[in-house]
Amino acid sequence: EFTLLFDTAWATYKAHFLRLLKVNSLPVIAVTALLAIFPFIGDFQTIVEYLQAGDIVRILALIFGISTLVVGISSLNYIAQIRVVSSEEEVSTISTYEYASKFLFSYIWVLILTGLCILAGFILLIVPGIVVAVWLSLTSFVLITGKAKGLEALRMSKKYVRGIWLQVFVRLLAAAFL
Image (cartoon, rainbow, N blue to C red):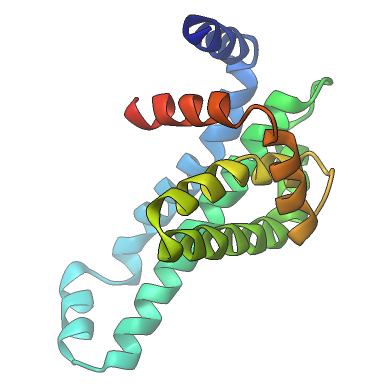
């Protein structure tokens, strides 16, 4: 069964390789463009002086801004990848990202809810945290495929895992080791 999982994953990857390559190229191009224009905005010394000013509000604002940018781009790319793999028809890269942008805030909200639920489980003890993490492991897929949003996506994920909890846990553990 373990090799079947990897065989299926490899077959899916090969079947969607070109579409995944196109979707993953867009964030790389965007980040490269930002890095290319960065020298015109300011150099490294300017950033060091900015941080050495010691204004905690400025430093926190910079950290928040960079974190928001990273989470936004990563989330859009993740949603677009799932859309490409789960879509039966051929869709353009632009329409894939348009689709992804519709789910961005819902996706981030579901990530926050999932994180809070898992944190609550880990506060209770480690085992409940692991159980909750496995229950909610399919939440993003439920959301992105359009089956539910918000708390309902969390409930549906738990429902999908019911009866196959151990199999899902083993697969998540295998993926974590890889």
